Each structure stands twice: as structure tokens, then as C-alpha cells.
Length: 542
Ligand code: AMP
Image (cartoon, rainbow, N blue to C red):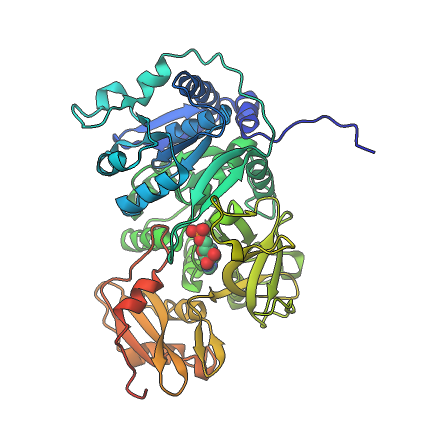
């Protein structure tokens, strides 16, 4: 017997319809590539996204066509997404921080037919367009006045392109499982893999993420997604913010401490989200200038482990609550959030910080398990660690084109590639990527725990730990550090700071100081690169 309720497909453009109807006057503020701060509203974005849909249709785009975007977070970028989705097309975010050849590889794999591009990224497109034969339309996210005077490419400016249409357009109707978005994983090893979101998965993910114990979003929020739309959908904010009518403040191309601070302050941002490297820049800026964050309530930190010292600085020095979150492109991306359940509501001081080092617990819609190598489920005791696996309506069931089949099993579990433990209350803590874990004398050492500890030293800016071959123990940890400007601590001073805070046999055998630690295009420490750099390194005793 079937239920007798209405069939109301979960389509992404319904989110924008809702935002325009109920929160039409709520603002979206964007720092533009051209310089000025641009202001628009949900009503405007709705009307202009419909024009973009019309323009795409007029250019022959339709159901299933992949339409790439190479842009900073902006209102126009949002319109491009919704315009593409409104005709049943698939927005495909490209990460401009990748090498041009990697971008071309990804575009060819996805067979992108169209491209929306910010002015800043035209040199990339000029370098690769000839090598992407499927590409037949390039729309520059600017107006006629800012178009380059000459280019070897045939391009139109976005404003003139949508300006030819009246916005009198009915979104196309189709099944909620229709593909609507695409994002390739950063792929530290092997080729990037494509994740293909559906309307249903994006809408459900947005519903999940606005919940009070997740991002806790509502119409009174002023949210600044510093995390780019090309990094796992800006963690869903382009869908979750309009779903509740939150004001969005887009930082555009400038993510240095001063520029981020300027918008946090002038727009009275209440909530923001980004990877730890961005917050390092903001915290240094605040430290240098003595400025405070009177409007900001909370900051969501994920993408890499949030160091304890960072949580401490935000909470204790600036009164901003940190929500440590974990997720993956393959999970739309939210997987867990470090908000406190009633059992932990009284925690404070060091014990609260201990709990916040964990990546939190899974919201409704994300199921988790940890298993050993033989696929036997491990207990949630807060110490036994194993492979972290997830499933849910916002989790990929395969990669586009069929790569990585070994990561998906018959019961629908997706092997995240992360190693974690989960405590009795469901709080998960990532100890490593499985490829980064150090195996010493048959036991595992968590590099993330050591890194977090090291950056707690007042002179350390950033730290990375890798395994170095050892004749007796197979592998032993090497701590690689960047010191804060003007600081010159001795290796022994850092080791002394760490001693007693981790098991003795976890202690790094040595410390190496470097000028720079390489990062991936999504801000993660690039351990493959570090392992190459230190391939010939050996400890004195082994
Ligand atoms: P991406 O798809 O680029 O967001 O990368 C996902 C991966 O980033 C995860 O599988 C983790 O290895 C890592 N990651 C994300 N959030 C965290 C976090 N809070 N702590 C540690 N690692 C994280």
C-alpha cells in the first residue's frame, strides 16, 4: 500500500523558489573580481538564474549536459549553478588551484560542454581550451565593460548573455534522482575521481546540514562561506543558506586575514566556514592588529584536522565557538560535526578542548562504522581505530566513470580512506588518512595527533608528521615544522613540550625545520610531496 501524499520531487531549484518567495529581500554580498563589493538579493538571484537557464537553452544546452564553473564564491557563480540545474544540466565545479593540465584532464573526463569563468582564471582557460574538444561555450562572469579587449578565445560576458532574456521561464521538471552537480576529488594519489550529485542528494544534504545540531542555520544568520564553491560545494552552503534565507557574504578572490576581517566586520557576519589554513591567516592578522570579532558567533573548521590551539584561540581570545567538522567531497560533504550532546554540555576548559579535537558525531542521514582490514566491525570505545566507512542519501554510491570500485561494498558502505576511532557517545576522531598512518613495530601512530600537539607550541606555525624508514621499527615519526615569524625554537624544546602528552613510543625521533609545507588544492598538507622531499632522510639511530 502506498502512502497518499503528494509527489513533490526534491529538486534544487525549489530551494531558490522558496528563498525568493519567503526571503526575497535577503541580501547576498560578494567581493567581486573586478574590485567593488556587489549587493544582490535572493529575489534577484532567482530572476537572473532563470535568465541563465533561458540563455543556456537558447545555446542548445539541456538535460545531463555538464557545464563547468571556474570561479570564486559570488552571486553570479550561484546563478550559474541554479541556471544550469534549472534545465536539468549539471554544474561542474573546477578547482583553479590545480595545474592547468589537471583541469583539462578533469574537463575531458567529465566532457564539459560549457564553462562559466571568472576573469581571474582566463589565462588558465586560454592555456587549455584547445585541449578540451567537448567545450563549445565560454561565458565570462563579468559585464561588457570588463571583458578583455582581445583573446584567442570566443567568449561572451555573462551580463550581456543573460540580458537578452526576460526570465519568464518555468524550471524543467524531471526525476529528483537526476544528476545536478559534479566535483572531482583532489586525488593526492592517482587520477582525480568524479562525484556526481543528484537533486535529491543536494536537497537532503541541505536539510540535514541546517539542523540545530549541525550548522544550525536560520534566516537571522549572516554566513560567510570562505570555503570555495569548488571545494565540495562550499560545504553545501549555496543550497543550505537559501533554504533558510540566511544572508550570504562571499569573500570572492581575497582570503588573506585583512580582507576576511574587513567583511566579517562590515557585514556583521555571524557564522563562517573554512579550512584551518585560512583561519591561521585570520588569527595572525588579529594577533598583529589587536582587532576583535564582536559579531561572529561560530566558525566551522574542517577539511583538515582543526588544531587544539586554534580552537582555544577562537574560543578563549575572541569568544567565537568552534565547530570542528569532518566530511568529504563524496559525502556532499558533511559527515560529522563537533557540537556537544547533553552528556557533554557541562564540559569546559581543557576537557572541552579534548572533546573538540574530535570531529564530532554524525547527523541523521549519515551512518558510520569502523572496521578492521578483514571488514570486521570494531567497537565504539574511543580508542580502537580502524577504517572509517559511511553510508547515507548524501554519500556517493560510485565514482563517475566507474573508478575506485574497491571503495564501495555490497551493503552500501563507502570506505572513506580515513582511519578513526569512535567513542561510546558516537564522537568520531580521525587519526589519519590510511595512506599516512605510521606503522612502528606493528602498531599505528597517529600523525594528526602529533601535528595537533606540535602546533600547540607557541613558536610553531604549522607542523606535519611523516613516517621515515627505520631499521628496527619499520617506520618512525619525523616532525616537520614551520616556525612563527621571528621565532627560532630548538628541536629539543619542541620535543620537551610534547613529552608526557602522548605515549612515549609515539614521540617523533627528530624535528626538521622547513620554510614551507606543501598543500593540496584544497588546503591539505601534501604528505606525498613531503615523503618525496624526505625520501633520503634517515634518523641517527636507524
Ligand atoms: P575533501 O573531499 O577534499 O574535502 O577531502 C576529504 C578528506 O579530508 C577526508 O577524507 C579527510 O581525510 C580530510 N578531512 C576533512 N575534514 C577533516 C577534519 N576535520 N579532520 C581531519 N581530516 C579531515
